Image (cartoon, rainbow, N blue to C red; front, side, top):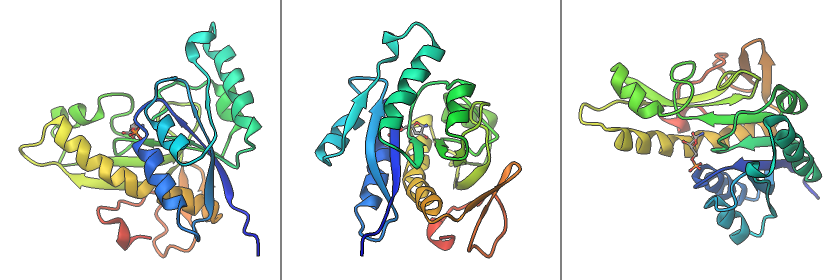
Length: 222
Ligand code: GRF
């Protein structure tokens, strides 16, 4: 029997460790999603090599080739759409997207952000969390809306902040949670279990109806 997998196009700008986590998960025969292409705005993004090594088509659309954001996003959309994605996965794609681009992929584009949103949108989240003295920090996977780092929350993972943390140590602990929750969120999407209701997302099949799942130990919530 041929199983039709959810077609994911992953957008990256750099290292690609979240891409790697998704590729690893997608290597399991029963994972319901496949990465059909990786697209980057940076020709030297390290993550591109991961995709090449996995035999996945890559495309580079350099933002420096376009006069403005609108022109860039149109070109990007054209390239992304050639791969016929069911889901666009932003994995460290360091661009602010135009409302037109976001609307085109409404309810089928997700992002991972290294904080417990809505706290610490934007950059330098780990240092800002330390500066704010929060006791918990973490990461969030959410549907993308026109407002940066907002949009219905699919899953969150929390980590404790330690007294001796610096941005590096805290960021490393958060990143390892990112690698757990992002493949999980993609799987839930592919299984058709995510239902957006206002600002929240109901995850079908979970006893807990909360839209945002705080998951210090992800295994407990899958
Ligand atoms: C991650 O921290 C992610 O949350 C943020 O950008 C970083 C990308 O890292 N959006 P990587 O390229 O996946 O290693």
